[in-house]
Amino acid sequence: MPIEIKMEGQVAVVTLNEGENRLNLDFLGKFIEALDEVEKKTNANVLVVRGADAKIFSNGIDLEWLMPIMQKNDTATAKKFIETMMALFRKIALYPMPTIVAMTGHAFAGGAILCCYFDFRFMRSDRGFMCFPEVDLGIPFLPGMMTAMKKAIPRCKLDEMVLTGKRVAAPELEEHHIITKACPIDQLMDEVMKFASQQNKRRPVVELIKAEMNKDIVYAIDNEDPPIIASGRFYV
Image (cartoon, rainbow, N blue to C red; front, side, top):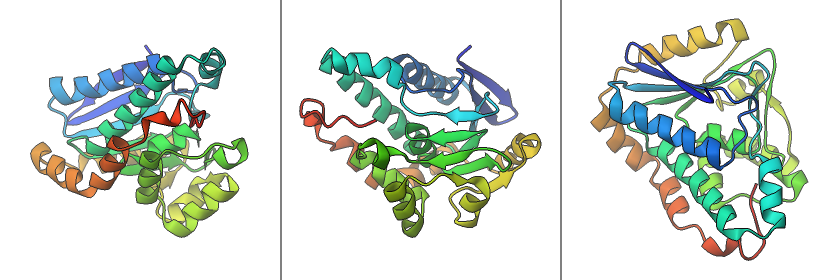
């Protein structure tokens, strides 16, 4: 199963179980379906998303899938991909319960951006980096991405990470309050679940609070300029 859902009390644990968890249309669709299932078919009041791979949480956009689409100038599929990816990000930003991501390994590019939409981030301390290599790839960020990154990362550290492409390990991320806690891999999920079990909040209240807190992210996503595809400024 590429994505698994397990209930532990009031906590829904969603496991991304597709290797490097690269973002393509199929994976994004299944991720959105899993979030819909948790929201509509369970009584969960906390969402935890973890990676199954012990080395990589998410390596970002699936370029092996995407590049042939771009080479064929299949702008319809490319546009659908961007819209679906941003729909997933938007859903996480507005999700009506606290959201926690357990970064079980590397989070690169789109995978690192994905983590920024969560309310809380935990990461294994003994292996893995968070990194935005777009500056070296020659690729800028969509406004809805950058707005979420500004939410998650203090400006002085964000400048360093996005302008140098620096790989940052969990202890440094914790020092700058980008992640809530850095933990050895054998303690990561215990710490995540301990934290999650304390977040027994009412969904309607959390939904209203997050709608206000993250309205700038939603605005940026909803008002992004569609011609980026046609103009060739494709963001990965």
